[in-house]
Image (cartoon, rainbow, N blue to C red; front, side, top):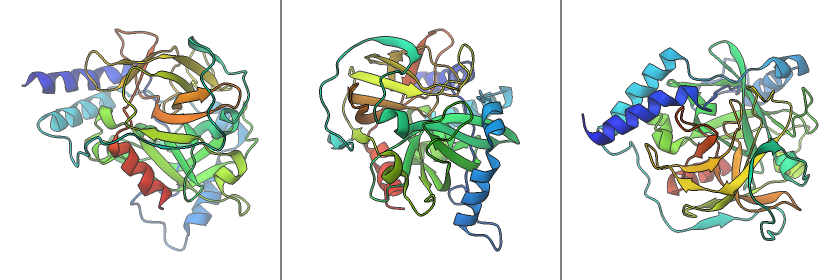
Length: 333
């Protein structure tokens, strides 16, 4: 076995004890056929209605179990045997601005704590709820500016895991202890990068959802949208947000970390950030050029995983051309 394959496999095997937590509900999954006699809008309404306050409070972060570890390890081995499936090369730096201007970052660092700064991030960031193997679970996500006004970015494993797309996927922006102050936005379509879709390659753990309108209104018309940036490089000042639901957190509050990122020195090509967020934060946004006063920035990664031997450190995928292609597919849907 090559050194590259061994590194990939080792990294995959360590994911379960980290911050990977998949839970999803979507209506329907990408590429899945709708039940006879139903429409995407009808499925979206059913999914939103399913997630009552009690069910949202009871949803648990779903770490990878032993069986999932084996499957993800096997997927990593297949990916390591050659170039990633449908690999998309990285390209030139590109960015989509948020709804408000971007003043300079004002303070660093923060290893993890409740966000009390207000601003747009409190309405664009939310919890993601879905069913995974009969379990009610949660991740995090973020509403971003897009042509369709209905695009949410999250982690790849928050839309698909172990070869199966999650079902009844719902995004709850600004979630507060069982409440949905900005509504429940059910997905009509979920997508991921070609590399995650084909082999669940951790380097491309990025997902997206297109959500149905609520009362005739589009998502970002109601909550605003963050900017998005691609190919921005490493070693950047970044803020990470999410709704961790595993101890010492309980999923009831928006938590953040901030600091200067590193490049993963071990198994992946991801960004790393000193951060104590736990399961449930997966899919939450990482921002460059984040302004604390307005709560806006350029989303440049998502919470993805952590290593058992490197506690209090979160890793997030590099937003290259593959992530840009995913964003364009989502906003064009």
